[in-house]
Amino acid sequence: MRYHEGLVNPQLSRLHPYPFERLRTLFTGITPPPALPPVRLSIGEPQHATPQLIVDALQAHMAGLAVYPTTAGLEQLRGTIGQWFERRYSVKLDPATQVLPVNGTREALFAIAQAVVDRSRPAPLVVCPNPFYQIYEGAALLAGADVLFLNQTEDRTFAPDWASVTAEEWSRTHLLYVCSPGNPTGRVLTLEEWREIFRLSDRHGFVVASDECYSEIYDGYPPLGGLEAAARLGRTDYRNLVVFVSLSKRSNAPGMRSGAVAGDADVLKQFLLYRTYHGSAMSVTVQHGSIAAWSDEAHVEQNRVKYRAKFDAVVPLLATVLHAPKPEAGFYLWARVPGDDDEAFARDLYATANVTVLPGQYLARDAHGTNPGRGYVRIALVPELSECVDAANRIASFCASPRWPWTP
Image (cartoon, rainbow, N blue to C red):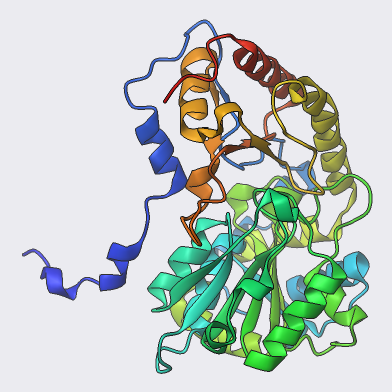
């Protein structure tokens, strides 16, 4: 017996295809040169080896698979995460009330909207950056809210334009997503920008969800985090602020699906209640692997060295053909393409050089008269150094070809 179509959540029809579905469609019918090995720079999946200390911890605690985990997680894990925040950001957290383990930031960033958006209030809004991580949009729509996009453009150094949101729109806002370091731009929010975020949150009462999963990939000074900014500004209760961190990028363990949320104890109390019903408990085995990862910084420092080497090698190779400056943090290049047709660039680069990059317009929405991702491609420097250099040389040769840019 088939389900009745009227029983399907109508919000599902508002979801957009995921960027990688659109990329597969774009490449339909194309056969890249078989003599060139494929290099995939389109997806932000870390390719460095997972550290042995994590593997060892997982193997040593396989008996945890026989135990139902609690949603709140082991006290040892929450304590270890709290200690990491203190070492990294000089902030004090109560592990019992201000820290929660989560099954990766993707799951938690989606879930927070379901827990925060109040559907009983008229016309709820969720505000998010544009370009953005598409989970923000899907989470908002499935929570019954509309999405208000804040365009982040190069002429503003990709800074959010808070003034573009009206007082009436802020009054309807339940949740603000921010991403720092940004995906795809790598931009880091400043202390003054955080001050304005907190001022707006205090005035209008919305929750701030800060996606900080790229916080540990940087060259030079560690990026400012949301909890750190709050503490510097005297907001040690972290009211209406929750930050999301992950082991996927930091520790090259995306398949472990392990991260953490920390911040306002009142928000996390309700978030824990939602997650208990949602069934979001982390395996005890994975929790022990996570304890090992959060306890060690040596592998994180080694990871940064690898990314630094890739940026140092790739950016100069692309400088003569693309505007692709080194970001403040993260492992992406947000590159402006010749001719401003990012789809044609990605398609023809794949067809000619067997290198995959992601069209920028797939990471953004048409808003305020423009799509701020159009004319850019996102290049994820996640393969090993030799592959990244090979891909950069192919991109440079492709861009230098007299056939580019083609007329759409």
